[in-house]
Image (cartoon, rainbow, N blue to C red):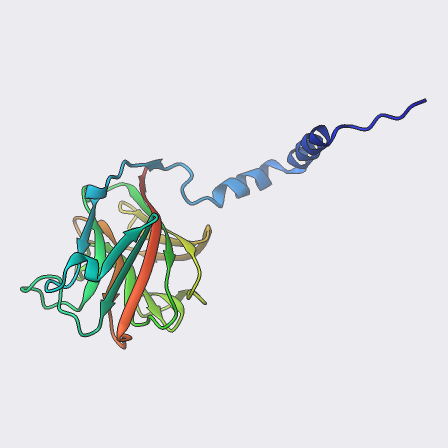
Length: 223
């Protein structure tokens, strides 16, 4: 009797079906839970939602470039603040405009890149706090991504693209940070009546003379 061999596409499909059937419901739920955006709705963004803040005495293209979908932001430790009236440290940041929030669950997603040598800088923040200006900041110090200047969120952050998701549950006063889909931090909120997201470079203590971060595929989501 002649033998019959399944064509390769059918064999591949059969293997996939077997794997899915072997997965328990708990395993399937765990796999779905690995996506921090599950259950969220993406809001609509246009370029008008991305508002640049750079040192007030230099032109936009002296500290910012947007090419091929990548936003490159850099600042010098000797730079001026973003307005003549400000007493804050140098920054080149993008403030997400049009989606201030005071309740609900909101999420920032973006793919970030920090070149080696950049240190003493905030690369992302959730603006708005009770006794402070922010409710969350992510700093880079010597290749480590930190919650403010405190605990390490991710090691070896230099010279690689990483997926960053920050979830802010305002009503529960809770924030979670995910790196490449893995939850790395959960902290309480810091109060505040209104919040919005920012990313880029904002000088902190013990900063390098040159600070840079790059970003792509920015999204804002909500429940």
